[in-house]
Amino acid sequence: MSRKGENIYKRKDERWEGRYILWYNAEGKAKYGYVYARTYQEVKRKLSEKRSNTLQPAPPKSSMPYNDLLDLWLRSVRLHTKESTFARYAHLVDTHIRPALGRYPLCQISTQLVESFIEQQLHGGRLDHGGALAPKTVSDMMAIVKSSMEYARYNQLQVICNLHKLTIKRKEKTMRVLGPSEQDALVQVLLRELDRYKLGVLLSLYTGIRLGELCALRWENLCLTSTTLKVRETMQRIQDRGDGAERKTKVIITEPKSACSIRDIPLPPFLVQLAQPFSAHPQAFILSGAQDCYVEPRTMQNRFKRYVRESGIADANFHALRHTFATRCVEVGFELKSLSEILGHANVNITLNRYVHTSFDLKCSNMNKLPFPI
Image (cartoon, rainbow, N blue to C red; front, side, top):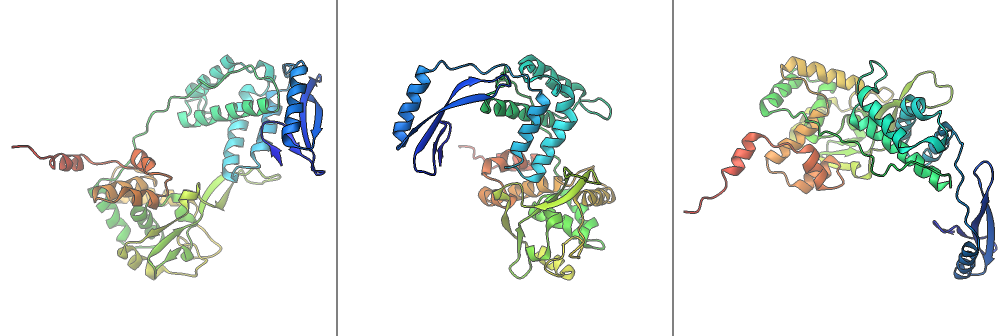
């Protein structure tokens, strides 16, 4: 047991141990002195006296290459992050951060250098044609740099940059929502010669589940008798960081992105009727009907694009189904807390700010409800 941040620990012999910095060696590693006592309060008092009577040395400027720090940071975050998150971090580090900053010693990573790096990524960071990277991508890189610098400070390495006020301005993207007539046109295409792929699109359109959640669904998650859809896993393709990996990417099935995403969704009766003819073994994937064969998100996205073209509506990606579901629910008077839980959000504000897009007709209808005092 330890007291976090105080360098005080309880030993196996029931004594308490405290440590304090005596000096730093040439490599920038701290050398410690130690005090011991039978109680926590006593060792804390002794530690305070030692620290007040010892001239505290300033951490030396570290000549450690930033590349080495990134290796240590990645090794640390791998212990407490999901595989997909770690793969994202490692990809950004190896593709963008190392080539630009890795060669510098840590003592030369200044605020100005990081600002220049961020500006360059925002205007010409794409490797394929030198175009601008999305602000979200650059913001993720900034978060990695900040976190790695905090990791350096935690390990008592001197960091000369101050990145607290460095932020990325992100524009709110216009979310694609199918209008009622567009939705009707798409549904007509889906109901024509209905198959497992089209059933999957209908499930997303009328439950708001994410693409990865749909691809990971098995028939045991679709309870036709209780008319309930159980979201327990998600599927995604990530960078393969394994040793000796023959392919650059791999498909993984894991728990959803957050605890709130694990949820049960009541199904409307018409979806249950449409799904019944395709029912298969409980362990079979809904989209493939087989236990050992799945349909990955990229394949499903391509299928959906085909259905959009056949319906004659404007281009849309699969995630537009989620926005459309949320918007239709608001238009018919859905209770917002229920909608938030069905979508798997932590709170109602996320639902309102990100996924609810009211139509102009609904705004007009609401305005017409205002009474005029006569």
